[in-house]
Image (tube, rainbow, N blue to C red; front, side):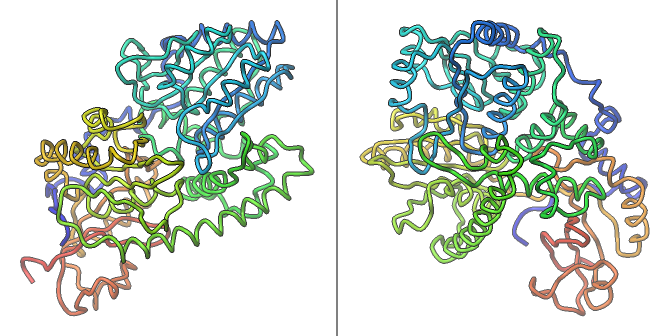
Length: 521
Protein backbone atom coordinates (compact mmCIF):
# COMPACT_ATOMS: atom_id res chain seq x y z
CA UNK A 1 0.00 0.00 0.00
CA UNK A 2 1.47 3.34 -1.04
CA UNK A 3 -1.02 5.80 0.42
CA UNK A 4 -3.78 6.17 2.97
CA UNK A 5 -7.22 5.01 1.77
CA UNK A 6 -10.08 7.43 2.29
CA UNK A 7 -13.56 5.93 1.93
CA UNK A 8 -17.01 5.47 3.41
CA UNK A 9 -18.91 2.20 3.29
CA UNK A 10 -22.60 2.71 2.54
CA UNK A 11 -24.07 -0.65 1.66
CA UNK A 12 -27.60 0.77 1.48
CA UNK A 13 -26.70 2.90 -1.56
CA UNK A 14 -26.18 1.85 -5.15
CA UNK A 15 -22.72 2.31 -6.64
CA UNK A 16 -23.86 5.37 -8.57
CA UNK A 17 -25.48 6.92 -5.50
CA UNK A 18 -22.31 6.27 -3.49
CA UNK A 19 -20.31 8.22 -6.08
CA UNK A 20 -22.82 11.08 -6.06
CA UNK A 21 -22.83 11.32 -2.27
CA UNK A 22 -19.06 11.02 -1.83
CA UNK A 23 -18.41 13.69 -4.46
CA UNK A 24 -21.37 15.84 -3.44
CA UNK A 25 -22.69 15.70 -7.02
CA UNK A 26 -26.00 17.44 -7.65
CA UNK A 27 -28.43 16.45 -10.39
CA UNK A 28 -27.71 19.80 -12.05
CA UNK A 29 -24.10 18.67 -12.60
CA UNK A 30 -25.30 15.64 -14.53
CA UNK A 31 -27.82 17.46 -16.68
CA UNK A 32 -25.89 20.64 -17.62
CA UNK A 33 -26.37 21.70 -21.24
CA UNK A 34 -25.10 24.46 -23.51
CA UNK A 35 -28.12 26.56 -22.59
CA UNK A 36 -26.79 26.69 -19.02
CA UNK A 37 -23.74 28.74 -19.99
CA UNK A 38 -23.57 31.99 -18.01
CA UNK A 39 -23.87 35.27 -19.96
CA UNK A 40 -20.51 36.06 -21.53
CA UNK A 41 -21.26 39.74 -20.92
CA UNK A 42 -20.14 39.08 -17.33
CA UNK A 43 -16.54 38.63 -18.45
CA UNK A 44 -14.56 41.76 -17.73
CA UNK A 45 -13.31 43.68 -20.80
CA UNK A 46 -14.73 41.13 -23.23
CA UNK A 47 -16.99 43.64 -24.98
CA UNK A 48 -14.26 46.27 -24.91
CA UNK A 49 -11.80 43.87 -26.56
CA UNK A 50 -14.36 42.81 -29.16
CA UNK A 51 -15.18 46.41 -30.08
CA UNK A 52 -11.47 47.27 -30.48
CA UNK A 53 -10.94 44.29 -32.79
CA UNK A 54 -13.97 45.27 -34.87
CA UNK A 55 -12.57 48.80 -35.13
CA UNK A 56 -9.21 47.40 -36.28
CA UNK A 57 -10.94 45.24 -38.89
CA UNK A 58 -12.95 48.15 -40.26
CA UNK A 59 -9.86 50.37 -40.45
CA UNK A 60 -7.73 47.54 -41.92
CA UNK A 61 -5.18 47.97 -39.13
CA UNK A 62 -2.23 45.58 -38.80
CA UNK A 63 -2.93 42.90 -36.19
CA UNK A 64 -0.63 40.29 -34.68
CA UNK A 65 -1.97 37.34 -32.68
CA UNK A 66 0.64 36.19 -30.18
CA UNK A 67 0.00 32.67 -28.92
CA UNK A 68 1.74 29.99 -26.91
CA UNK A 69 3.38 26.83 -28.23
CA UNK A 70 1.23 24.37 -26.31
CA UNK A 71 -2.05 22.95 -27.60
CA UNK A 72 -4.12 25.50 -25.69
CA UNK A 73 -2.18 28.33 -27.33
CA UNK A 74 -2.24 26.76 -30.79
CA UNK A 75 -5.99 26.15 -30.79
CA UNK A 76 -6.56 29.65 -29.38
CA UNK A 77 -4.48 31.21 -32.13
CA UNK A 78 -6.13 29.11 -34.81
CA UNK A 79 -9.76 29.87 -34.04
CA UNK A 80 -9.15 33.63 -33.74
CA UNK A 81 -6.94 33.76 -36.84
CA UNK A 82 -9.47 31.76 -38.87
CA UNK A 83 -12.43 33.78 -37.61
CA UNK A 84 -10.82 37.04 -38.72
CA UNK A 85 -10.32 35.48 -42.15
CA UNK A 86 -13.93 34.29 -42.25
CA UNK A 87 -15.23 37.80 -41.68
CA UNK A 88 -13.14 38.97 -44.62
CA UNK A 89 -10.06 40.37 -42.88
CA UNK A 90 -6.56 39.71 -44.28
CA UNK A 91 -4.20 42.12 -42.52
CA UNK A 92 -3.30 39.83 -39.61
CA UNK A 93 -0.43 37.49 -38.77
CA UNK A 94 0.40 35.14 -35.91
CA UNK A 95 3.48 34.38 -33.85
CA UNK A 96 3.94 31.16 -31.87
CA UNK A 97 7.12 31.24 -29.73
CA UNK A 98 9.27 28.12 -29.58
CA UNK A 99 10.00 27.35 -25.94
CA UNK A 100 13.00 25.28 -27.06
CA UNK A 101 14.63 28.40 -28.50
CA UNK A 102 13.06 31.34 -26.65
CA UNK A 103 12.55 32.24 -23.02
CA UNK A 104 9.19 32.86 -21.39
CA UNK A 105 7.41 36.03 -22.41
CA UNK A 106 7.29 38.11 -25.58
CA UNK A 107 10.82 38.34 -27.05
CA UNK A 108 12.40 41.79 -27.23
CA UNK A 109 13.09 41.37 -30.94
CA UNK A 110 9.38 40.79 -31.56
CA UNK A 111 8.53 43.99 -29.70
CA UNK A 112 11.03 45.78 -31.94
CA UNK A 113 9.44 44.19 -35.00
CA UNK A 114 5.94 45.29 -33.99
CA UNK A 115 7.17 48.87 -33.57
CA UNK A 116 9.31 48.97 -36.72
CA UNK A 117 6.60 47.45 -38.93
CA UNK A 118 3.98 49.78 -37.48
CA UNK A 119 1.51 47.24 -36.18
CA UNK A 120 -1.61 48.75 -34.64
CA UNK A 121 -2.86 45.95 -32.41
CA UNK A 122 -1.35 42.98 -30.57
CA UNK A 123 -3.73 40.30 -29.29
CA UNK A 124 -2.26 37.77 -26.87
CA UNK A 125 -4.00 34.42 -26.47
CA UNK A 126 -3.28 31.96 -23.66
CA UNK A 127 -0.76 34.35 -22.17
CA UNK A 128 0.26 37.93 -21.58
CA UNK A 129 -0.99 38.50 -18.05
CA UNK A 130 2.61 39.06 -16.84
CA UNK A 131 3.78 41.22 -19.76
CA UNK A 132 3.87 44.47 -17.78
CA UNK A 133 6.91 46.16 -19.35
CA UNK A 134 6.31 45.00 -22.91
CA UNK A 135 2.69 46.16 -22.92
CA UNK A 136 3.79 49.53 -21.55
CA UNK A 137 6.48 49.84 -24.24
CA UNK A 138 4.02 49.00 -27.00
CA UNK A 139 1.53 51.53 -25.68
CA UNK A 140 4.20 54.23 -25.64
CA UNK A 141 4.77 53.49 -29.31
CA UNK A 142 1.11 53.74 -30.28
CA UNK A 143 0.33 50.01 -30.34
CA UNK A 144 -2.71 48.78 -28.43
CA UNK A 145 -2.57 45.41 -26.69
CA UNK A 146 -5.49 43.14 -25.89
CA UNK A 147 -4.50 40.47 -23.38
CA UNK A 148 -6.59 37.30 -23.32
CA UNK A 149 -5.35 34.82 -20.77
CA UNK A 150 -6.39 32.37 -18.07
CA UNK A 151 -3.27 32.09 -15.94
CA UNK A 152 -3.21 33.30 -12.35
CA UNK A 153 -3.14 37.06 -11.93
CA UNK A 154 -0.32 38.38 -9.77
CA UNK A 155 -0.23 41.64 -7.81
CA UNK A 156 -1.05 43.77 -10.83
CA UNK A 157 -2.21 43.48 -14.44
CA UNK A 158 -0.64 44.93 -17.60
CA UNK A 159 -1.86 48.39 -18.55
CA UNK A 160 -3.31 47.06 -21.79
CA UNK A 161 -6.21 48.39 -23.83
CA UNK A 162 -8.23 45.44 -22.51
CA UNK A 163 -7.44 42.48 -20.27
CA UNK A 164 -9.75 39.49 -20.64
CA UNK A 165 -8.93 36.97 -17.93
CA UNK A 166 -11.66 35.39 -15.77
CA UNK A 167 -9.20 35.10 -12.87
CA UNK A 168 -9.24 38.86 -12.31
CA UNK A 169 -10.78 39.63 -8.94
CA UNK A 170 -13.31 42.04 -10.41
CA UNK A 171 -14.39 39.69 -13.21
CA UNK A 172 -17.92 38.45 -12.53
CA UNK A 173 -17.92 35.59 -15.04
CA UNK A 174 -18.33 32.32 -13.07
CA UNK A 175 -15.80 30.36 -15.09
CA UNK A 176 -12.41 31.35 -13.79
CA UNK A 177 -10.92 27.93 -14.61
CA UNK A 178 -11.40 28.29 -18.36
CA UNK A 179 -8.54 27.27 -20.63
CA UNK A 180 -7.01 30.00 -22.75
CA UNK A 181 -8.90 28.70 -25.77
CA UNK A 182 -12.16 28.97 -23.83
CA UNK A 183 -11.49 32.67 -23.26
CA UNK A 184 -10.67 33.10 -26.97
CA UNK A 185 -13.84 31.23 -27.97
CA UNK A 186 -16.00 33.59 -25.91
CA UNK A 187 -14.19 36.58 -27.43
CA UNK A 188 -15.13 35.26 -30.88
CA UNK A 189 -18.74 34.79 -29.77
CA UNK A 190 -18.78 38.41 -28.57
CA UNK A 191 -17.34 39.77 -31.82
CA UNK A 192 -19.77 37.65 -33.86
CA UNK A 193 -22.70 38.89 -31.78
CA UNK A 194 -21.73 42.55 -32.33
CA UNK A 195 -21.39 41.91 -36.07
CA UNK A 196 -24.45 39.64 -36.32
CA UNK A 197 -22.14 37.11 -37.96
CA UNK A 198 -22.47 33.30 -37.62
CA UNK A 199 -19.74 31.40 -35.74
CA UNK A 200 -18.23 28.29 -37.30
CA UNK A 201 -19.45 25.38 -35.15
CA UNK A 202 -16.06 23.68 -35.53
CA UNK A 203 -14.46 26.30 -33.27
CA UNK A 204 -16.19 24.59 -30.36
CA UNK A 205 -14.48 21.31 -31.26
CA UNK A 206 -11.02 22.91 -31.24
CA UNK A 207 -11.93 24.64 -27.99
CA UNK A 208 -12.54 21.18 -26.51
CA UNK A 209 -9.17 19.96 -27.82
CA UNK A 210 -7.32 22.85 -26.18
CA UNK A 211 -9.34 22.56 -22.97
CA UNK A 212 -8.62 18.85 -22.50
CA UNK A 213 -4.94 19.25 -23.44
CA UNK A 214 -4.45 22.03 -20.88
CA UNK A 215 -5.87 19.82 -18.10
CA UNK A 216 -8.15 22.49 -16.67
CA UNK A 217 -10.93 21.19 -14.39
CA UNK A 218 -13.79 19.66 -16.37
CA UNK A 219 -16.38 21.36 -14.19
CA UNK A 220 -18.84 24.19 -14.72
CA UNK A 221 -18.32 26.03 -18.00
CA UNK A 222 -15.55 23.67 -19.15
CA UNK A 223 -17.79 20.66 -18.60
CA UNK A 224 -20.60 22.30 -20.59
CA UNK A 225 -18.31 23.09 -23.54
CA UNK A 226 -16.78 19.62 -23.67
CA UNK A 227 -20.06 17.78 -23.11
CA UNK A 228 -21.62 19.72 -25.99
CA UNK A 229 -18.85 18.46 -28.27
CA UNK A 230 -19.22 14.87 -27.09
CA UNK A 231 -23.01 14.95 -27.48
CA UNK A 232 -22.94 16.51 -30.96
CA UNK A 233 -19.85 14.70 -32.20
CA UNK A 234 -20.97 14.07 -35.76
CA UNK A 235 -21.81 17.74 -36.29
CA UNK A 236 -18.12 18.70 -36.48
CA UNK A 237 -16.68 18.40 -39.97
CA UNK A 238 -13.70 20.71 -40.36
CA UNK A 239 -11.20 19.72 -43.05
CA UNK A 240 -8.46 19.37 -40.42
CA UNK A 241 -10.59 16.95 -38.40
CA UNK A 242 -11.69 14.90 -41.43
CA UNK A 243 -8.10 14.53 -42.65
CA UNK A 244 -7.21 12.87 -39.34
CA UNK A 245 -9.88 10.16 -39.77
CA UNK A 246 -7.50 7.31 -40.79
CA UNK A 247 -5.58 7.76 -37.53
CA UNK A 248 -8.62 7.82 -35.23
CA UNK A 249 -10.52 5.03 -33.48
CA UNK A 250 -14.30 4.75 -34.02
CA UNK A 251 -16.10 7.35 -31.89
CA UNK A 252 -18.62 4.92 -30.43
CA UNK A 253 -19.06 6.46 -26.97
CA UNK A 254 -17.90 9.23 -24.65
CA UNK A 255 -14.73 7.37 -23.67
CA UNK A 256 -13.66 6.82 -27.28
CA UNK A 257 -14.44 10.44 -28.17
CA UNK A 258 -12.37 11.71 -25.26
CA UNK A 259 -9.50 9.44 -26.35
CA UNK A 260 -9.72 10.94 -29.86
CA UNK A 261 -9.59 14.47 -28.45
CA UNK A 262 -6.54 13.54 -26.35
CA UNK A 263 -4.83 11.94 -29.35
CA UNK A 264 -5.42 15.07 -31.46
CA UNK A 265 -4.00 17.13 -28.60
CA UNK A 266 -0.86 14.98 -28.58
CA UNK A 267 -0.48 15.45 -32.35
CA UNK A 268 -0.82 19.22 -32.11
CA UNK A 269 1.78 19.41 -29.35
CA UNK A 270 4.46 18.74 -31.97
CA UNK A 271 5.85 20.92 -34.72
CA UNK A 272 7.68 23.76 -32.98
CA UNK A 273 9.66 25.83 -35.44
CA UNK A 274 11.65 29.07 -35.47
CA UNK A 275 10.61 32.65 -36.21
CA UNK A 276 7.09 32.30 -34.79
CA UNK A 277 6.04 29.41 -37.03
CA UNK A 278 4.47 26.18 -35.84
CA UNK A 279 3.75 23.11 -37.97
CA UNK A 280 0.65 22.12 -35.97
CA UNK A 281 -0.89 25.56 -36.39
CA UNK A 282 -0.02 25.57 -40.07
CA UNK A 283 -1.76 22.20 -40.42
CA UNK A 284 -4.96 23.76 -39.11
CA UNK A 285 -4.88 26.74 -41.47
CA UNK A 286 -3.24 25.10 -44.50
CA UNK A 287 -5.08 24.48 -47.78
CA UNK A 288 -6.76 21.10 -48.15
CA UNK A 289 -4.14 19.74 -50.56
CA UNK A 290 -1.32 20.31 -48.04
CA UNK A 291 -2.98 18.90 -44.93
CA UNK A 292 -2.25 15.21 -45.53
CA UNK A 293 1.48 15.79 -46.02
CA UNK A 294 1.71 17.98 -42.90
CA UNK A 295 -0.32 15.48 -40.88
CA UNK A 296 2.08 12.67 -41.79
CA UNK A 297 4.93 14.80 -40.44
CA UNK A 298 3.02 15.47 -37.21
CA UNK A 299 2.28 11.75 -36.77
CA UNK A 300 5.95 10.92 -37.23
CA UNK A 301 6.95 13.63 -34.76
CA UNK A 302 4.43 12.26 -32.26
CA UNK A 303 5.86 8.75 -32.56
CA UNK A 304 9.33 10.13 -31.97
CA UNK A 305 8.00 12.09 -29.00
CA UNK A 306 6.46 8.98 -27.46
CA UNK A 307 9.85 7.28 -27.70
CA UNK A 308 11.40 10.27 -25.91
CA UNK A 309 8.77 10.10 -23.16
CA UNK A 310 9.44 6.40 -22.59
CA UNK A 311 13.18 7.06 -22.36
CA UNK A 312 12.57 9.90 -19.89
CA UNK A 313 10.44 7.64 -17.70
CA UNK A 314 13.29 5.12 -17.62
CA UNK A 315 15.78 7.89 -16.87
CA UNK A 316 13.65 9.13 -13.96
CA UNK A 317 13.48 5.63 -12.49
CA UNK A 318 17.28 5.41 -12.53
CA UNK A 319 18.14 8.98 -11.58
CA UNK A 320 15.54 9.97 -9.00
CA UNK A 321 15.53 7.61 -5.99
CA UNK A 322 12.40 6.60 -4.09
CA UNK A 323 11.34 9.67 -2.20
CA UNK A 324 10.08 10.03 1.36
CA UNK A 325 10.36 13.80 1.52
CA UNK A 326 7.65 16.37 0.96
CA UNK A 327 9.07 17.78 -2.29
CA UNK A 328 11.55 17.06 -5.07
CA UNK A 329 13.81 19.65 -6.71
CA UNK A 330 15.75 18.04 -9.56
CA UNK A 331 18.38 19.70 -11.79
CA UNK A 332 18.87 17.98 -15.14
CA UNK A 333 22.68 18.09 -15.03
CA UNK A 334 22.96 15.24 -17.55
CA UNK A 335 20.94 17.20 -20.12
CA UNK A 336 18.68 14.20 -20.67
CA UNK A 337 15.39 16.12 -20.72
CA UNK A 338 14.38 18.61 -23.39
CA UNK A 339 13.12 21.91 -22.05
CA UNK A 340 9.57 21.33 -23.31
CA UNK A 341 9.44 18.00 -21.44
CA UNK A 342 10.39 19.32 -18.00
CA UNK A 343 6.70 19.69 -17.11
CA UNK A 344 5.98 16.13 -18.20
CA UNK A 345 8.87 14.87 -16.06
CA UNK A 346 7.76 16.82 -13.01
CA UNK A 347 4.21 15.57 -13.49
CA UNK A 348 5.33 11.92 -13.50
CA UNK A 349 6.91 12.23 -10.07
CA UNK A 350 4.22 14.50 -8.62
CA UNK A 351 1.58 11.88 -9.45
CA UNK A 352 3.76 9.04 -8.22
CA UNK A 353 4.57 10.56 -4.82
CA UNK A 354 1.71 13.10 -4.45
CA UNK A 355 4.14 15.88 -3.58
CA UNK A 356 5.34 19.12 -5.25
CA UNK A 357 8.08 18.52 -7.83
CA UNK A 358 10.32 21.10 -9.52
CA UNK A 359 12.51 20.27 -12.53
CA UNK A 360 15.35 22.64 -13.41
CA UNK A 361 17.45 23.02 -16.54
CA UNK A 362 20.08 25.47 -17.73
CA UNK A 363 19.07 27.29 -20.91
CA UNK A 364 20.38 30.47 -22.54
CA UNK A 365 22.53 31.30 -19.47
CA UNK A 366 19.56 31.14 -17.08
CA UNK A 367 17.78 28.37 -15.24
CA UNK A 368 14.28 27.48 -16.35
CA UNK A 369 12.00 25.60 -14.00
CA UNK A 370 8.79 23.65 -14.43
CA UNK A 371 6.81 22.49 -11.43
CA UNK A 372 3.82 20.24 -10.88
CA UNK A 373 1.87 19.21 -7.79
CA UNK A 374 -1.38 17.62 -6.70
CA UNK A 375 -4.01 18.66 -4.16
CA UNK A 376 -2.95 20.37 -0.96
CA UNK A 377 -0.38 22.72 -2.50
CA UNK A 378 -0.37 25.90 -4.60
CA UNK A 379 2.67 26.44 -6.80
CA UNK A 380 1.85 30.07 -7.58
CA UNK A 381 1.73 30.85 -3.87
CA UNK A 382 5.01 28.99 -3.44
CA UNK A 383 6.67 30.95 -6.25
CA UNK A 384 5.36 34.20 -4.81
CA UNK A 385 7.17 33.21 -1.60
CA UNK A 386 10.30 32.65 -3.72
CA UNK A 387 9.95 35.64 -6.05
CA UNK A 388 13.09 37.43 -4.78
CA UNK A 389 15.12 34.60 -6.30
CA UNK A 390 13.24 34.51 -9.63
CA UNK A 391 13.35 36.59 -12.80
CA UNK A 392 9.70 35.88 -13.53
CA UNK A 393 7.10 33.16 -13.00
CA UNK A 394 3.58 32.27 -14.04
CA UNK A 395 1.07 29.49 -14.45
CA UNK A 396 -1.56 27.72 -12.40
CA UNK A 397 -1.87 26.41 -8.85
CA UNK A 398 -0.79 22.92 -9.90
CA UNK A 399 1.33 23.63 -12.99
CA UNK A 400 3.69 26.59 -13.15
CA UNK A 401 7.07 27.66 -14.47
CA UNK A 402 9.76 30.27 -13.91
CA UNK A 403 13.18 31.55 -14.94
CA UNK A 404 16.01 32.40 -12.55
CA UNK A 405 19.65 33.41 -12.59
CA UNK A 406 21.99 30.45 -12.02
CA UNK A 407 23.45 32.07 -8.93
CA UNK A 408 19.96 32.32 -7.41
CA UNK A 409 19.05 28.61 -7.58
CA UNK A 410 20.39 27.76 -4.13
CA UNK A 411 18.40 30.70 -2.75
CA UNK A 412 15.28 29.51 -4.62
CA UNK A 413 15.74 25.98 -3.27
CA UNK A 414 16.02 27.31 0.28
CA UNK A 415 12.89 29.46 -0.07
CA UNK A 416 10.88 26.74 -1.79
CA UNK A 417 11.74 24.16 0.85
CA UNK A 418 10.87 26.70 3.53
CA UNK A 419 7.43 27.15 1.97
CA UNK A 420 6.98 23.38 1.67
CA UNK A 421 7.79 22.95 5.37
CA UNK A 422 5.01 25.41 6.21
CA UNK A 423 2.58 23.31 4.14
CA UNK A 424 3.78 19.92 5.38
CA UNK A 425 0.50 19.06 7.08
CA UNK A 426 -1.58 19.80 3.97
CA UNK A 427 0.79 17.80 1.77
CA UNK A 428 0.68 14.79 4.11
CA UNK A 429 -3.10 15.01 4.35
CA UNK A 430 -3.40 14.68 0.58
CA UNK A 431 -1.14 11.65 0.31
CA UNK A 432 -4.23 9.53 0.03
CA UNK A 433 -6.46 7.70 -2.41
CA UNK A 434 -10.05 8.87 -2.36
CA UNK A 435 -12.49 6.03 -3.03
CA UNK A 436 -15.82 6.82 -4.67
CA UNK A 437 -17.69 3.56 -4.12
CA UNK A 438 -17.21 0.31 -2.21
CA UNK A 439 -18.55 -3.14 -3.05
CA UNK A 440 -17.49 -6.78 -2.65
CA UNK A 441 -16.74 -9.37 -5.30
CA UNK A 442 -20.08 -10.95 -4.41
CA UNK A 443 -21.77 -7.72 -5.54
CA UNK A 444 -19.99 -7.52 -8.89
CA UNK A 445 -23.27 -7.89 -10.75
CA UNK A 446 -24.32 -4.53 -9.32
CA UNK A 447 -21.13 -3.02 -10.77
CA UNK A 448 -22.09 -4.39 -14.19
CA UNK A 449 -25.46 -2.65 -13.81
CA UNK A 450 -23.66 0.61 -13.02
CA UNK A 451 -21.59 0.29 -16.20
CA UNK A 452 -24.67 -0.33 -18.31
CA UNK A 453 -26.95 2.37 -16.91
CA UNK A 454 -25.06 5.10 -15.03
CA UNK A 455 -21.40 5.22 -16.12
CA UNK A 456 -21.85 7.82 -18.87
CA UNK A 457 -23.85 10.19 -16.68
CA UNK A 458 -20.70 11.41 -14.92
CA UNK A 459 -18.64 11.82 -18.08
CA UNK A 460 -16.57 13.51 -19.37
CA UNK A 461 -13.85 12.49 -16.93
CA UNK A 462 -10.71 14.53 -16.50
CA UNK A 463 -9.11 17.10 -14.24
CA UNK A 464 -11.51 17.97 -11.41
CA UNK A 465 -13.84 15.12 -12.37
CA UNK A 466 -11.56 12.11 -12.41
CA UNK A 467 -12.47 8.60 -13.41
CA UNK A 468 -14.01 7.07 -10.25
CA UNK A 469 -11.95 4.90 -7.92
CA UNK A 470 -13.64 1.71 -6.72
CA UNK A 471 -12.77 -0.36 -3.68
CA UNK A 472 -13.40 -4.06 -4.36
CA UNK A 473 -13.43 -6.27 -1.26
CA UNK A 474 -12.68 -9.98 -0.94
CA UNK A 475 -10.85 -10.25 -4.24
CA UNK A 476 -9.00 -13.53 -4.78
CA UNK A 477 -6.83 -13.43 -7.92
CA UNK A 478 -7.01 -17.14 -8.73
CA UNK A 479 -10.78 -17.10 -8.45
CA UNK A 480 -11.76 -13.64 -9.66
CA UNK A 481 -9.17 -12.24 -12.12
CA UNK A 482 -10.96 -13.55 -15.19
CA UNK A 483 -14.29 -12.17 -14.05
CA UNK A 484 -13.00 -8.66 -13.45
CA UNK A 485 -10.24 -8.67 -16.11
CA UNK A 486 -7.84 -7.20 -13.56
CA UNK A 487 -4.14 -7.80 -14.23
CA UNK A 488 -2.42 -8.71 -10.97
CA UNK A 489 0.77 -10.62 -11.79
CA UNK A 490 2.92 -7.48 -12.09
CA UNK A 491 1.64 -6.23 -8.71
CA UNK A 492 2.94 -9.27 -6.85
CA UNK A 493 -0.42 -10.52 -5.60
CA UNK A 494 -0.52 -14.10 -4.32
CA UNK A 495 -3.15 -15.91 -6.44
CA UNK A 496 -4.58 -17.69 -3.42
CA UNK A 497 -4.71 -14.80 -0.96
CA UNK A 498 -7.71 -12.51 -0.48
CA UNK A 499 -7.23 -8.77 -1.02
CA UNK A 500 -9.01 -5.46 -0.95
CA UNK A 501 -8.09 -3.63 -4.14
CA UNK A 502 -8.68 -0.13 -5.47
CA UNK A 503 -9.13 0.04 -9.22
CA UNK A 504 -10.49 2.24 -11.98
CA UNK A 505 -11.83 1.62 -15.45
CA UNK A 506 -9.28 1.92 -18.23
CA UNK A 507 -10.27 1.21 -21.81
CA UNK A 508 -12.17 -2.05 -21.95
CA UNK A 509 -10.66 -3.34 -18.72
CA UNK A 510 -9.58 -2.29 -15.24
CA UNK A 511 -6.39 -0.84 -13.80
CA UNK A 512 -5.31 -1.59 -10.23
CA UNK A 513 -4.27 1.49 -8.26
CA UNK A 514 -3.45 -0.04 -4.87
CA UNK A 515 -4.05 -3.20 -2.84
CA UNK A 516 -3.66 -4.71 0.61
CA UNK A 517 -4.47 -8.02 2.20
CA UNK A 518 -8.05 -8.21 3.37
CA UNK A 519 -8.55 -7.89 7.10
CA UNK A 520 -10.76 -10.97 7.04
CA UNK A 521 -9.07 -13.46 4.77
